[in-house]
Length: 271
Image (cartoon, rainbow, N blue to C red; front, side, top):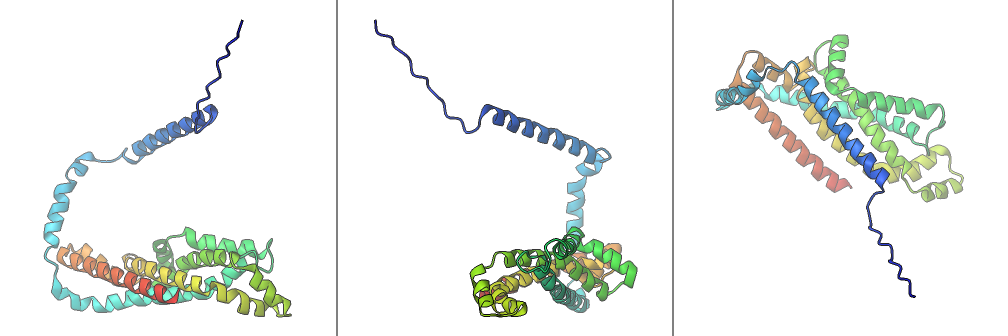
């Protein structure tokens, strides 16, 4: 008598059953955390003001139009200050970020155990604190004005430039470094002839990208007394001069668009 055995049919699954359960538990935890965070954030919210927000926004928008074009003659100098703050802050950050990046990269640092952690600490500290917070601290230390804004932009930019640059240094072609070192070149000559040419295009792109970001950040540093066009914005907001506010916002928008266009064109030419 013939015995018929039915072949076992295996159904393909993307994940195993434990992995699927773990995924669902993760989604459930995410939902719980989201609901808890929403309740925490809206615990003291006055919903009557939220419901009235569209009418308030429409009222302020009507007051902001048309912009007060005659106020433009008083914005040229603050706008120039803003550009100077962004540019000088970026250049100052560059002077500190480049050696910091070489100290942080594994293939160029003098000591992986001692010097590299210190360089990484500088980079992380710079990136962890927002430019507005740097501005607040510096205004309290050295007083209001453009100098505080320049140092705030610089301190914020060191971590950005340093991190991207040291990652670019670690990704260079080691063969070129070995070839130059084989000629008997010193450590400084190896860096000059084998490493710098490889990372120079990346550095140019990083600096231009950061300068573009700093243009945007420097426009609001005036809100904490660090100079620039943000100071004019704060003054107009304090007196509820909405036509002036709309003009300042328009100037900031045009400035940011132009800086982004210039940055993109220069990066395309250099890289």
